[in-house]
Amino acid sequence: MACFFWVLLLALLSVIPLLNGFAQATPHGLSFKSRRDDSVDFDVSVLASLGDSFASGPSAGDEYDDSPCRRFTEAAGPQLARSGEIKGPKPIDFNFIACSGARSKHIYEDPGARSSSGGGGKEKSKRSQANQLADSKKGFDMITLSIGGNDANFVDVLDRCVYRFKDVKGCAGCTPSVTHNDCSDDCSAALEELDGRLDNENFIPGLTRSIQAIFNAAPKAQLFMTGYPAFWNAETDACDKVSFKFGCINNSVLPLIRERRRRMNDLTRKLNGIIKRVVTATNPTGGGSIHFVDVDPYFDGHRFCEEGVDEPSYRNSDIWFYPFEYSTGGTLNISASLTHEANSDQCSSIWDDDGDAGDYFNCLLEIGMAADGITIDLGSMPNNVAGDDDLGDLTVERVSSGSGSLPAFLARIFHPTVKGMTAYKQALLGVYHGSVTPPLEPAVTPPREPSSATKTAAGTPPLEPSSATKTAAGTPPLESSSATKTVPDMPPLPTSPLEASSVTSKLANMPSLETSYVQM
Image 1 (cartoon, one colour):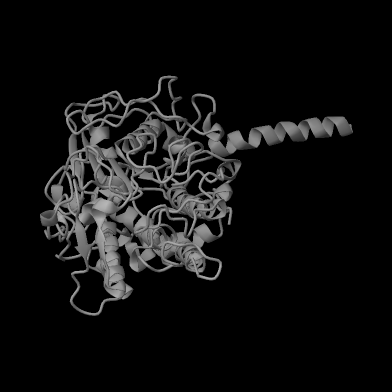
Image 2: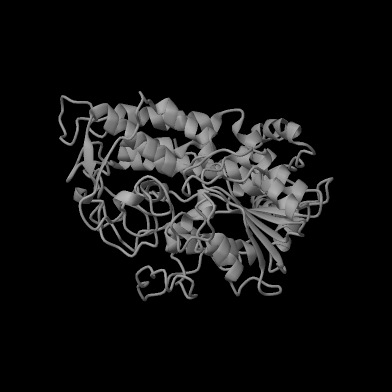
């Protein structure tokens, strides 16, 4: 009898996940299974790309237009629009709305016209990104969205833990010493502050209001919301004595120790877990649907600090993020142009003026030089490495503004290269086809990143997944853990932005969907 009981119990446990996967429809007519079926190979006539710089693609390919939003031709959206794997009439009507520096509020709230140096002083749109969708009066079939990274302010961590633009001679200068502060304490504080922003009660409502605004503008669209890739290989000690701190040659101050890299990765994956929870808790009621796209596994083997790579490594086509690298063609001295007392609060206000990471880092660098009374020869820095950048060489005439300006090179720091943006496209196609399993990388080593003349050509090789994601073909999307399968009925999308707090409160009572992402 006891044996029969245990057999019966095991049988029930094996069936429960299936029952959850084919759960009864919610009162709003959407079940988990219908969400997966809707994502498989639907026709796309009109496509839009919304969000921040991880959607606009700074420096990935050629400039897409002359806006200050740093949109480039090899960002994931344009690549997806050209893909032969998307069904429907060709060419696809593609609408590139993503803009560097965008936060959640820029999706749902009209910012008005504010100046930005992101493209030679031009102005960004006076309309929110969702309102730009509505203004077009098009029937959008598919929309991609990347948002949340700037709300969390990851650029603050990149400055305080990686480059230290704001105090070029600070943190013991360029000489490590046991008697001098190497700014490790400030880096730890930056990481704690970022963690606090992710836990802030206003963070999730910002995401839900963005989603609501998009579905108000395009109620029948299928929305694909991407997460973010972790920047580091945190399983090796290869970078434990390496620093990216700017302004020094052969610098080892503020080293990228494994614990620090792991902490940064954990926060990226915590953000991904929050985004996925919001997506899973959202039930559009106007005929559309929403899907989470996990881009992170597609970058395995192509992050900073990979085993066997001598970091900092410049012009390395196997690393799918841009470090701070540029080419000057010779001596290029820069000094602070600020004529009044400046502080980091002035740089923080750049976000409120619709600036982006390039503007922010440039401001910090000027403050650092002004505070220390120094001039920097960019030509003598190890970051100065000749390449085939579409941005061109930095020159005296182009340092402060324009597409080839110093802010333009700063804006692409830690953003995906062309190959990285191709990884985004592959991740999006994986969910579009109904499978989240990354394709295996072929035995042939991928060629070097193409020049501007060939970047629009198809044929970028498939990408290598992590061991955790090398699952059997046909794995249904949006179901990556047992926790996901046991989630109770999801709350519907709020009918107005002011109801976003109700989703937040319901999320708080739900089991964690990505407990593996929160390894604090």
